[in-house]
Image (tube, rainbow, N blue to C red):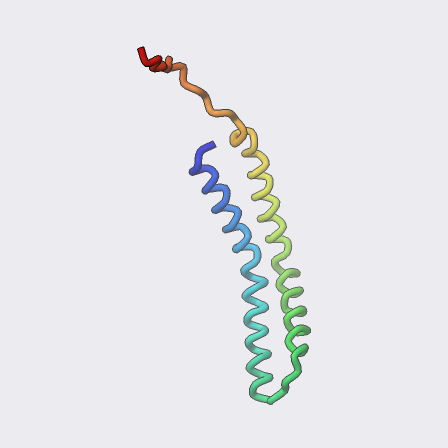
Length: 104
């Protein structure tokens, strides 16, 4: 296994995490921003007011995109598990004769 293969596996894992978490995080960010703007314009200073709309919005996004998220993650995991034999395969050692300098 080369360094390039390790970097590719790690890069694909990070990309998978970002792809799956982005819709939920962006939704929470937008809903939080909208609620904060409404709180600022109406002078409501309730700290817990942002949680309920965020929870509903996140559950809604998970309801719509949950199937896609599960399919994407299971495909990635299956591909990674299928690659284990290729990854674990020992590198072949060349049959070259190595001369040892004995100092004489």
